[in-house]
Image (cartoon, rainbow, N blue to C red; front, side, top):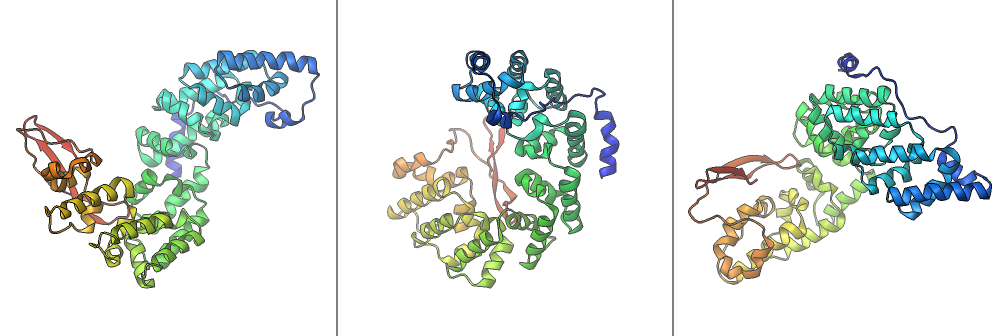
Length: 419
């Protein structure tokens, strides 16, 4: 893998040698220790402050902090050209101020070096807006060497993911992939997970949903894998990577608190472990949410603790967006005698709004009144009808259920995915 990536580097690396020139004195340190004469400081700093505020829309506070340092260590003309270059590339005023606040040395950089880095990202396929967001994220990419860091990072990621679009998507989710040592952290973690039986699809799940997990120190990754095995999670199951992520993303004490939270509900130790094996992501929610969902569902009188234990993914749904409006609708329908039996808890948890509306809201819209406003599903237009096809869908915890459907409007002959 690494040899293949290195082989591909040659075609991507430009012959131009450019990097951001840094001052011999750190600007933040200089801010604390400089001792310029008052006359020169006032005049020069005032000029810098004036340009930053009036020409580049900086706040007076940030302009004051930067102007004092720049008056001693850099060129006003160079700083102006750097900011103008970034503005030309669609950096907003707030993004520019964030960059300068975190990394003031950017104002002493060579404009051609910054331009070269922007061009590398542009040629790779990043949009101007994406580049501005990445570079203003506070990450070290702005002072990373173009040939020694940025290009090799892109090549390594492309060798792993297979396409520029996949790399762009990953970097947008976690810009740290542009600056960490991939060969020391990322690739060893991937190789280790594969040696444990994790499939390529499992690796992709982590890259798409939990990208920071693969940037853990390799020893922490190994400990997380060992803990998942210790808790009885099958390495060949789809839930294994979710279990590793759930363990790796929090401290040992935090995980124990979540487990104790379930024990406090009257769940036995063996049941807690079974819940973790079934839906490890449920152990990532807060204790407060755990208690709220339990109280909310048990208060209906329709569900018991055993229902929650048998389907722990119920703890992962939104209280405000999913449970409250649906439970309110069902309670009103029952009170008016319009339904006798409530749906299974798994249906309340997993059905899309459209499906729930079709079953329990639209047929009783007059009776439900304002309750209908909690649902944003569009009504089916007269003269059309819906064909509902079941889809096999996997939850983030890896458990499988049938909850999706495809709506086909036979009037417009348009098919759209609802789930």
